[in-house]
Image 1 (cartoon, rainbow, N blue to C red):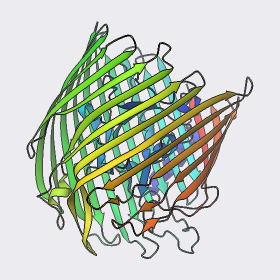
Image 2 (spheres, rainbow, N blue to C red):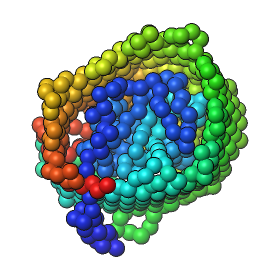
Image 3 (cartoon, rainbow, N blue to C red):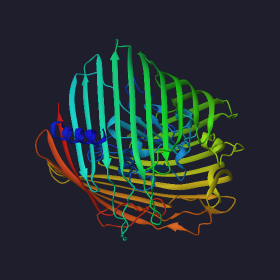
Image 4 (cartoon, rainbow, N blue to C red):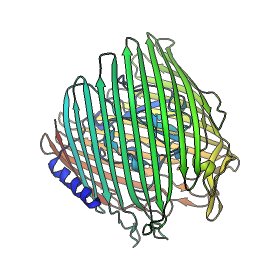
Length: 613
């Protein structure tokens, strides 16, 4: 069956078609960062507590996993246990469970470990994505101390027929193919996306003679997005998303791997949207399911199984009147986790939240949010945020200040995993302060921001013995830092232009009790991109730097800093056909994002995009 599916992927590449997505953020001369986003009625209303950045597809990464996409368009730290293995994200020095990943407004973080594996989410299922930095807990739920990423598929009721296919072949016998079909009218919307992803992944560890012998993976992804417009006031949508990823788990420099992990994720959603005059309402019911089968020895049929499912009911009512906007919402969800490692447990959570935005004066806007949650295990305090925004008359200068508090409950694994679970864990609490200044001109954008996060009872898994870990509460952690972004568009002539984009993050995260830096948090992250675009061609150079990362609580051992240079290029052969490729890690540098698990050296990728309208 597996070989049959690979053949189908190849045939799709020959007989189907795709081309570059022209709404790329790289092609958008307007702001790279937006204060608010215009949202269609079927989506949640825009929230502007903290910075909000909307990003759309880049042509070179449109068929890849969420990990690759975020590496390309953000300045965040992503930890990966070897190429294609489990990948997690860190925002502002927080850990992966402090970043909420949402699917069309519904949280999909694992109920078991609180994280989302970025290699199990493929980008073709989404046509718009938002990154929220800062205290967003009031609307995306408690726990998003670092930020949130909302993966969206916007439904537009207009006449359209589009077939796209994107075929990639690269080093380590890697093949990836994405097929997308969209058919819509003024009444009906239908979209289906199919992705296949395979790699033998047998790369040579740089500067060694060791081959990654247990890194093979094979993934399948299917998403369907449909909508029906009953009238100008009411429309309905149904969405579903399946992801299956079977992968061997790579070994380290010192021990070859022989285990494997099979994951199965499913999300389903039904939504009703009402809009009339100044009132709109979004009602959503959803089901989120995850299943993990872990084989300690891939050649043996013995495995352990852990799974969870969550049920959601969510309602958002939005009212706009002149200078005021009022949103009230509530969300009920039940999560059930069970498996060989945790037994069977259930958590109920109900939340009610309100948001009020008002233009105080012509140039000042205030935003106040309050959230109250009721949890079957913990007593959750009131959560809230306050923001004040100043814009000059030309809206080219913006100053923002916000303060918020947050709360995060332990996960099923934190409480019940055997051995190691700690039922005596306390919930995490945090306070966030932000100050941001930006300048927005026609061909220039500059943004600088400061943040300060104080967390109490932060949960960290720490080694008790050489082979036994247990989660504990760290009494107090302070994360503070600076974020800098700059963008410049240069028109060389009528057919050629240059886009320059740079970002830099400085973050210092300390355990106050021990006066030591937290592990797996680089102090310095920098990125610079030069994008040359002509009438038919595009050449893109991406430079990134990640500072050293401590891997022990004593700060005595660390992973070295590393620099990467990647090059992407493409050429438009016809209106329907575009070819391109990429050279990753051009300088063949050695680097790790997790100890003793090197990433590949120089590697290559070829791409064919065909699109028919």
